[in-house]
Image 1: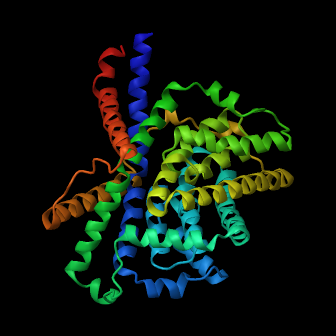
Image 2: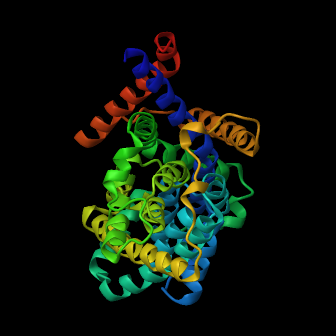
Image 3: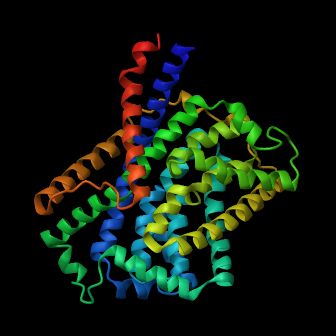
Length: 403
C-alpha cells in the first residue's frame, strides 16, 4: 500500500511537470504578445481597429486571437491589454475566446490525444462561442459596469499617460524593448502562483483519482443514446470537472481524453475543454483586472454560451453521423512528455527569452518577490510553495520508496 502511494506520488509529479513542459512555450508566446501590445499599441490605434462591436472588429479580434497563445492565463493578460487600450467588450472577449480555442497548436494537441472530430469541434465550437457571446452581450450589456471595468483595467495596465510615443520609433529603440522585458516579467509574476498550483493539482488528479469517479460524475456515461437532460448535465458538469483539474487549454486536453475514454459524451468532453475560462483561477485573475462584479458577469456569459455551443455541436455531429468513437482516446498517464520534438525546441527558445528578459529586468529596475497583497494571495503563495515541495519530493523522494 505504501509503495503504491509513492509510485502514484512520483507519477503525479511526472504528469504535472510533463504537462507544464508541454505548455511552457505557449505561456511564453502569450506573455510576449501581451507585452508587445502593452508597450507598442496605442489606445487611438486600438480604438480605430477594434473600438466597436461590429463584424470587422470582431473578425480582427478573432484573427488576432488565432495568432496568439493557447494559454488561458496569457490570453487573459492580452485581452486585458486590448480592453484597456480602448477595444470594445465584444472584440476583447472574442479575442479571449479565439486565443484559447482557435489556435493551431491546440488543434495539434487535440489530434494527438483525441480524434479529428474533436479538432473540428474545437474550431467550430470556438466560432460558435464567439457568435453566441456576441448575442448574449448585446442582450445583457451593462454599460456602466463595462466602463468601470475598463477604468480599472487601465489602472492595472499602469499606462494612463495621454501622450504615447510613436510605436515605429519605440520599436527601434532599446528603451522600448526594455519596457517589453519588464512587462513580460510582470505578467509572469502575476500568475505564477495560480499556474503552479493548477498544474500540481492536475497531476495529483490524474495519478490518484480513479476513472470510475469521472464515470459517476457524468450521468449516463458510456450510453449510446443520451437524452437532452443527460447531455445538459454533461455540459454543466464539464466545468465542474475542469475546476478540479484546471491547467489551461493545452493541459486540459490529455485529461479530456481520460473523460472520453470513460464514456463521457462529446458534449461533455467539449464542455470540459472549453471550460478553461470559467474556473476559479481565471475568475480570480479577471476579478484582479476588472473587479468581482464584472468578472462574475463575464463568467456567466461564458458559461451560458459554453453550454449552448457544446449541445448544439453534439446534436449537429449526431445528425451528420460524425460523433467520435471513445476507443480513439489516449490516456495521459501513458504520455511520454519529455522527448526531442518541436516542444523541446520551442521551450528552449522561450527559456532563453525568459532568462534574458528576467536578467534585463533585474539589471534595470531590480526584482522583488510577490508575497501577496491580501490574505487570498498570501494563501495562494503558501500553496504554491507546498506544490513545489510536493513536486520535488515526487521526483526525488518517492522513487526511493516506490520499490
